[in-house]
Image (cartoon, rainbow, N blue to C red; front, side, top):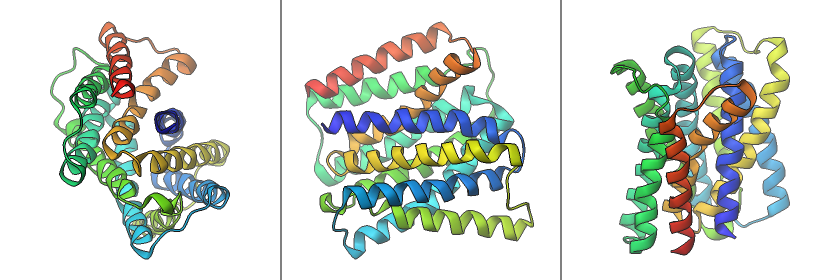
Length: 274
């Protein structure tokens, strides 16, 4: 059940990032992110009420801190996607983001079994291959920086949510979204930018926000059981984004990406068997 719940996270977040990247390319990046987070807050609140739970004050503090890291991560990710492309940003962010919760889980809970550990390593390789879109691209230090920062921030986000108690349910995500909204709004006011995204982009930011809420909620439930595995699934959303770009935007996959999807499937099988 944990595996099935965890798989909903990359599917939802991957589709959300696919749509969100297209929205942010129209301009007013911070306004688009703000709108997305408002509707993510709404969707996570609905899910939290439906799921129930008894979060402690510490759980809510962890969730609140995750709002800052996720806000910084999403801004860096979309900025990297829109200015440098996905070819370098995506694999760097994916691997960086997966390493953080895996390392923390190893410290807190001990090393995983040999089979699960092998699955995690193979999964990291698969995530990298899926994101390796521009095989002939040179070293782009700006893209690498965007990938490292966004990946680290997403890794911190997933770690903080994963450290919440099993009885907390999805409630820790709610204060995190409140903090994220306040954080992005503060940036907009400081920079004196537009608060509202382009009118035609609002329906899509609603869709992205709702999908993002589902993704964060299901990830939190899975991470409360196994942070390392859920963290890897969370980073597989980059591969799902590529897949949706192929399906809906007509982009072609490279042979390396096709190998990456196969490797990720093997990793999933190892984790399930473990």
